[in-house]
Length: 486
Image (cartoon, rainbow, N blue to C red):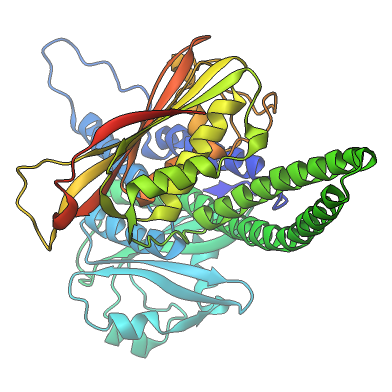
């Protein structure tokens, strides 16, 4: 049951981690036949019933498949060890089972997974540390990493423990990685007169082998979590550090531009143009840093929802006025449709603003000719009974363009990190490929959705639906559509 040690992987190489993890998971299935003895069953003549051996092999294989499926769903080491012990006791029909895990730094073994029918003395048992010398006799006596102990008399185990814990016969499976013992899976009966079935030995060996694979996968996942946390912390710190000097540069550029413009002569125009370019490029860099900071917060789970009351019409107008000039293109018009008299709604305005801005930025980015159209609407059922002085409604924002469009098979890909409309990681259209990923994650926090309709070479429409609350006093406001072309 030895498992070859995986080569060391640097924290920066997350792809290798995932590759090793996938390889380990596939080993679970490929090794089932070895430990279950699930070779091709002997031929059975037509009409003849399957013999006891065939039935036993099938039962053993089913049991190990059950273990493989169960262990695949345990992401943490402690939960996995408990699961192994419970599965072993249940499948072997034993009185108790435990995972005796080696701590090489302290040269001791600890029980880190215990399953018993009574639960008596469990707390006492798991608190005991067993010196390696006390356990090594089982490791050394194991044949093919499996041992069957019919009596603990004469073992190094303290007689008081044997009596108090009523340790009877048990089967043990040694867990190894790269020939080093990791621990022992023990499955036993309290009644010394109880005999184990012959298949129990093979069952315990199979479970122990799968436990090794699952523990290795859990270790890799733990290292992945640590690496991801380090990445998230670094991104957050880097973003904050970069924003401060960029804000200073932007401020000084604005001051110099104002001074140059006040001078008036033609000679200063070139200086004004250069300062305008500085302003545009620093604004672009600030937006990239803000997207990176948003990503850091999303990945760390720090996305609290702050609901506030906003005038939806004023929100839409402020959003339109805040579109940077450098997003615009000479051959692309902006069309803006918002109903007059839009109601006051209760929503996280900052997140909704980021969602809509990212969609508009994306539309301009992928459109060279034509137009970008933004529409706001509020859907509210007038027949709903008010609750807590407000009724549920949906804010619906659609952003359409006449740009490159998106192929049907790529409509899910574009919401992944660092991906763009062509499904690649390239930066053909600028940006870092975070805009739509942030849209998706923020909408998840808002319990909203985004729908995509697109035709390659003809453009795309992204429709965002966000549930909100509308105060009763304003829910009956009349609306009249008007358009403002930009």
